[in-house]
Image 1 (cartoon, rainbow, N blue to C red):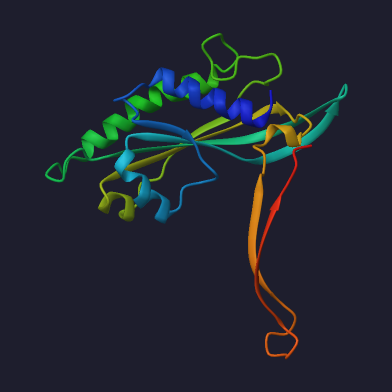
Image 2: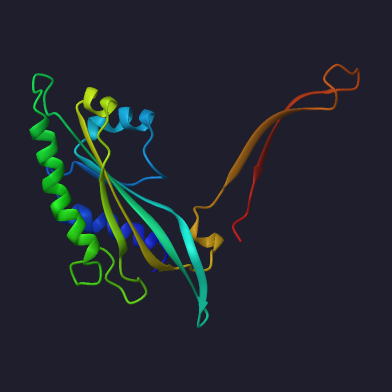
Length: 195
């Protein structure tokens, strides 16, 4: 199973196990949430963001390149109203979601698991960590990260898997812009043919 296919399977499994309104959003995410990201995603909470953070232990196993991928699911819950100052509501919501999410990851080889294919290895080193801080408390947020490692097959990349790049537009000045022989700004449009 490729990294993208596995990430999509994880997103799908979490979304099925925690449908709205339990989680309003379950999506792939590029990396870990920063403070700026957290402010942006608060409106979607409760939500889960799935990322592959990298690979280790890449090996060639019978013409199949296998790598141990490091996965993270970031879980964000928040106070439901500005008047509610109850830590219990956001913490209880996060705990209830975690009690569904962690077994789903641990049991990833079961028919109900996130990655139930022959080419995905078993989830290893599963950990959940409460990221409580003064900053998250001030924003009314409960933030947890669940991390684990799982083997994935690295499939050969194909340009056909990407959307076609049809046009490229750029504007530039040729030569030294102060010189007498400089060419004025030029618009260039290039159409690329699909392979």
